Image (cartoon, helix red, strand yellow):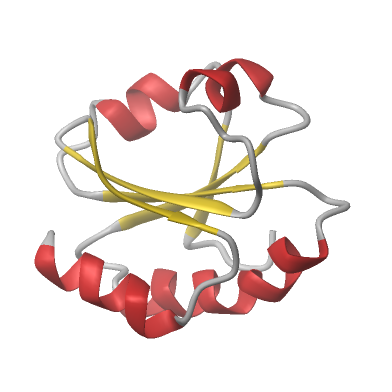
Length: 109
């Protein structure tokens, strides 16, 4: 991954890293072959930098981590979910504008 601020979440570490996190967590569900996912990556990186002290940001490769993708009913990618206190606070499906993510992050931090 391009940024050290973006964590890799897996079926194995998702509960600890995301659900038990003290701070809100923005999770980008993506796949290597997904062109809209690649187009969203710079936005996710920018958010990770801008919210580094307030929000944990990471990615789940849906091809490699099917269990977590099934649990959260990821039927289309990219899907970005903002978790707060282990619960889904916001869900964004498809390519979205940076401002939409910022609005949700500002409301949850």
